[in-house]
Image 1 (cartoon, one colour):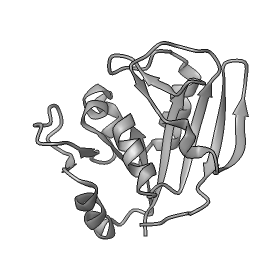
Image 2 (cartoon, one colour):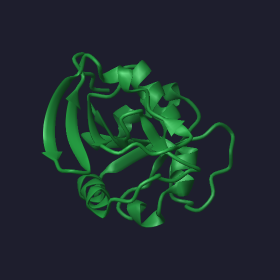
Image 3 (cartoon, helix red, strand yellow):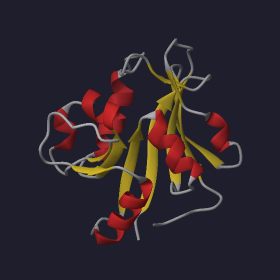
Image 4 (cartoon, one colour):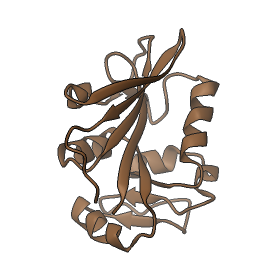
Length: 166
């Protein structure tokens, strides 16, 4: 059984990206992300894969969703064209947990299909403009616990009331 943990940052309006990058730069928040995901499997969409620094994948191959797009950069990755393909692969993984790191399409797919057990959401306090959003209404019924808070952002641990292990 694998536990899937979502991890993303969003503005109060749900903005998570602008032109395939983060619209903000908070080094401490990036360090937190790297610390939590270090050594773990990470699942993401193709656009997130192509925008992510390759050093994040030094410990494990990334798990990438792509619809018939050739994946650039790393030859050492696992690609999935559907959630069904991904879910059929999961039982063969020796890992007990993995992180879903984005983007919005993959996050929404995983949330709609209820395969995320918990979500570590950094709520950026300031509004930023962007072109990619996370639908925050998915978390309305999730149990919320504040992990850290400062003037710039608050990091929440959101627990799915219908916890699912795959």
